[in-house]
Figure 1 (cartoon, rainbow, N blue to C red):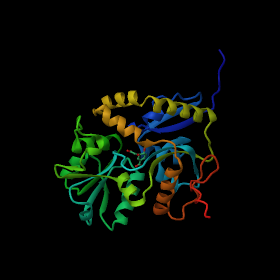
Figure 2: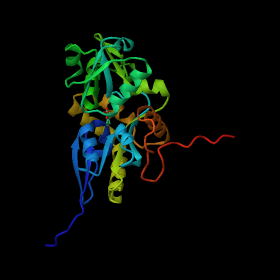
Figure 3: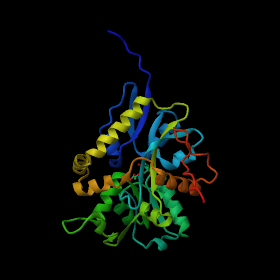
Figure 4: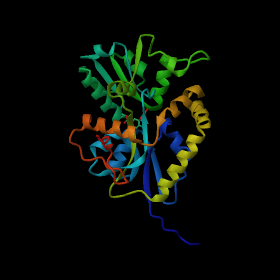
Length: 295
Ligand SMILES: C=C(O[C@@H]1C=C(C(=O)O)C=C[C@H]1O)C(=O)O
């Protein structure tokens, strides 16, 4: 038997439903292995060198732009509502001043986004790490609770649902039973008019990805976006949500780090890490979108 010596290229995968259109059909090429985890775990794994590439919190890419580069055509971005990055609160936003907000330990980007949004609206609150569902933490006395990912999507629907034949996703209320759900990407859109990039696929500059992996990722995404209905059905069953809700949730994402997403990323970077190292993509370009030519 011939022994093949494979060079090993470990990658990290955040396994939230929002990346299912990219990851569900991904076949890892020979020599590539994957670990899975929540954003803060994958951020740490990439930064400590346990993995060489991962979809990570965009803010960690920004903060570590000296050692990380990002793929030029992959992101988890959204223009307007995202449905799964939510602040649940019982008082109006402005009355959160001086209040206590619980933060999920899974997130880095959304915590930084919340800080930006609070700062820009002049609301100073005490931010504390605490785990639990939004409703449990509100019942425990927190004034606001930040939730992300699948839990946030489920808990959002628990508060504002159900949809029915008369109501589309867009008709759902933003509050119910004394609980308001503020969608942070929607709030960012109102503030800036730009998309918000939650995650990018970053890799260590000293360990660029093999071409076969990039090809496999692009192929998987093409398949996933072409089979969104099936993916939504499968994940809806796992999440305990209507397939209609999950399909809307998925098609709403922008998975290609296009010019508008870069604009949003650049703007966020200027707000969270002024003076950060240039954000470089693997095609050698900077994230910044060139200013439109002036006449
Ligand atoms: C849109 C989301 O984006 C995620 C949010 C992240 C964060 O807050 O650090 C990291 C990766 C993203 O995939 C979500 O979790 O719902």
